[in-house]
Length: 113
Length: 117
Image (tube, rainbow over all chains, first blue to last red):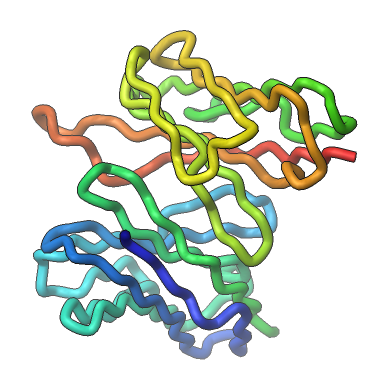
């Protein structure tokens, strides 16, 4: 069965600095999708970025980028130029071949002024 | 207007009561999901439905039931609520991209915070 592990329950970063959130997963599938979702205090789940496993190129969305290492089964999220509005819980998620999502336990990020 | 709505947004109830959480969507998506979120556990899948006649149990379905009344509506029921069902509940939808291949992105409702005393 697929699993998703986020080993950093909490992190903090100074405003304007860069932070990296870690995610590892376990699967025997060859093609799949990976996601990072953001959950601010409003509790709404917001898609930050997605990556298809067969694409070599790392996905980028403005200040958010990923480091996808397929062989190592690692999918980290880098936030550049951190802003106060980035303060949130971040979830890594995996989409299985049977179209179910598996979520990690989350990393609570606090951006400090 | 929000594409995925959940009612109620907050609910406090007592042990043994029957509770229904409702989810409606205007996105025209065929796939709908119910998750619960607990601190330190992330989101866990309760039930999912690929269309009105296709309902499947997720990893934590015990104590819950669902009803897909129409393509746009997917309700979650707790027949006899217990305190360890206190959690944040999310509904999510997912549709088809071009052709029959489903889109990979899920769209979430705003969540329902349920407290069982």
